[in-house]
Length: 77
Image: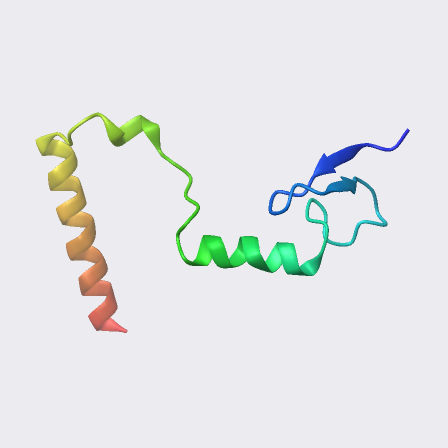
């Protein structure tokens, strides 16, 4: 028995197998619609580990140092 999944874009049933070229999407159109939503930042992967916690002074200092280092690296190239 073939495994069926729902297309994430249009909810059409898709057979999960090598014959489904755009799986999990039903078509290239649905795949591109989803890609466009990611590009437009309509989809996001939430990082709940840091959402409710303010940064500590040590973390802020570390970030400042990393940004300064990256800035220095950028202008060296």
